[in-house]
Length: 577
Image 1 (tube, rainbow, N blue to C red):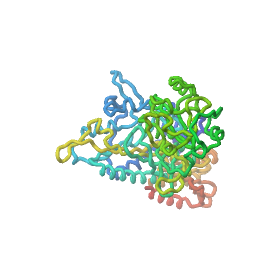
Image 2 (cartoon, one colour):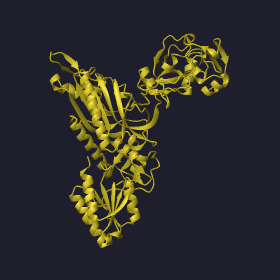
Image 3 (spheres, rainbow, N blue to C red):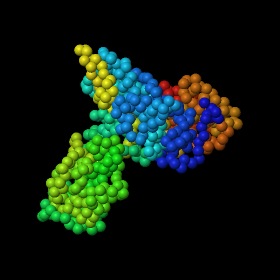
Image 4 (tube, rainbow, N blue to C red):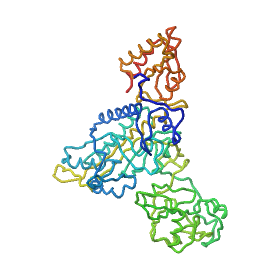
């Protein structure tokens, strides 16, 4: 490809709405252009990257025994009603009507469609196990799309679905996919951690995410990990806590209501009563599926909202607003403001206590009276009719690994893939069954395995860049090398550059010849910004029979003959997996 013909326009500045490295770099380097909120045009350079990621995914999925198909992007309401997700999925599901008033949705995922396909085609145990996958555009109507391709509304995804007759078969395929994923991300130049995670709207009993660990702002989730190999997303992580004061018998000799003026925060209350925060029972009001839920947790810890949502059996969670709390207090005959809320007298509301609450004795808790707390309290003093215990606590760095007892570490991660054990979550309600050898029907045992194609490309930028631009891993770079003649008016420079260009093309190397009549500095800046893995500069040293050979990843520059540069590049490309 000649640079003068390449459809690319680099920008002098980063877009004003770009927050993370990948969004900034991909937009400035001419890979993507925003169409509307959360929706992007993939320009030719980006499309080449995405097709390479797709091909790696396709090769490894095929090698792992999966079979590719393609399912419709638009899906009928009826199948989603069969699975029970039409009303449960939430506002991220983009609903619409066709001209015949048939209600449809834009597919954010394809569990219902693939289950219907299997229901029609897999009738006997003899046809299983089977794994079917597609690479398809998806649409989720994110309330706050951001981070460019990392959290867009429209995106490209590989999703695979396995069908087995037993849990043992599902376990085997789950591990098969986990190993395939490790190969895929390794080939894409990404180091990932396989971490335990929440199953979210997809559902299922067990799930893991593949996270690219990054120190950039693009890391969406905290990943807690240990040297022993334990790793989990913050919404699934558990830990053992160091010993703490949880019995206040040395602080309170009776149970009574005390004045605690202007103690709106845990720090203020702890200081006022001269007690450790571990002796305070914190009460927080959340809205889960439009209903209030009170979460109880030891005050030195925080609530993890996804854990709370799952414990409450909901699909949507948020902290209650001040107005909602005020309305709740009024409805129950109280006038308390946040900081003095408690579970007493709230038995018509679901109350969920974290496991840390079990051991608390003689503690301090709000009683729904402003500027007052109950001290020396125990759960029996609160008259809670129905209390559910669950792990709803957010793990913190330094807490102890649940497997080996060493302190946990935390880092940021970008999710690029996930795997789920669905079991019969979809096959049972959709009556997707097979006949066993005795002629008895059973629902399929299913698994689900997703990879974000566009997210993987963006994550590669987050992992490989410098202040000058992108440093693509060669396996997914749009082109392998750019040849830059410093002066296109110099006959010798152009002859050598064009000869190298033709030789590399003939050998299967993806090469760009920068034949623009621009200053060398402009060409060099564009080459670094776009992220070509190798740059060959044909300048004045060609009079000595030498060209400049630069490796983008390391910045290393060598002076070599044109023949050596060509041979080296051909050999590198031959060894790309």
